[in-house]
Length: 149
Image (cartoon, rainbow, N blue to C red):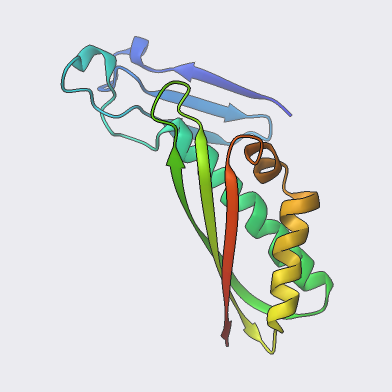
């Protein structure tokens, strides 16, 4: 896997701290820093997600992917899945995630709660590389609801 991240601030864009990432699969993502009122030259222009938001989004995508795939492989009629992630970060640099809560909402027809609970556990214990990496610095908790379609 590879990715190239390029600073766009040198090209005269509005943001001093904008970046473009081109993934190995050929997709492009933009990132930007938060504005810095004290030192505007060091801040971004709020034109895109922050890099740490991208880490969080990637983790949510990784685990949601696993949960849907595990449920589908179990022949469950899954029709929707979302996960809301909330975090706390360290107060000092490096401001790593110290806690992450993932709240899943799985929609489907006749899906037993035990199957969803098992899929979430399997993702976090075996399959989701992102959450397993983040668990080295953060306490990860989960919750879920099953919504009947």
